[in-house]
Length: 89
Image (tube, rainbow, N blue to C red; front, top):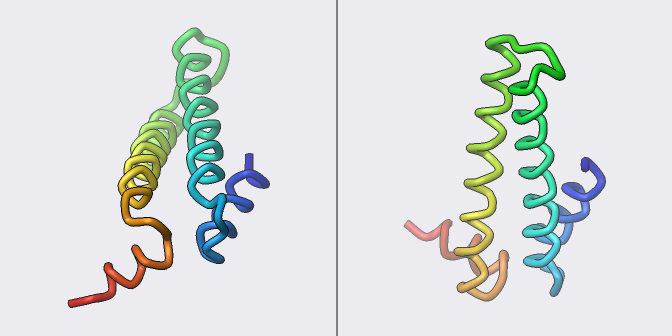
């Protein structure tokens, strides 16, 4: 998972043509993994602690926000253009 997210982050930061696909795939796979972790803990397959629950909740929110941001950036054309737009006052 780390390799996929690293490749996607590199694609976004270097404005590769395939940045969008890499970001969506990597974030989706990570989100599915976190949701599987939630399901496993709920089924009793792992430790159920407050810290573990907080970690999973934080990751679900962060990965969902990442997917929403990536989908919105797709409409702007490129991550470089999106960064320029964000930097304007």
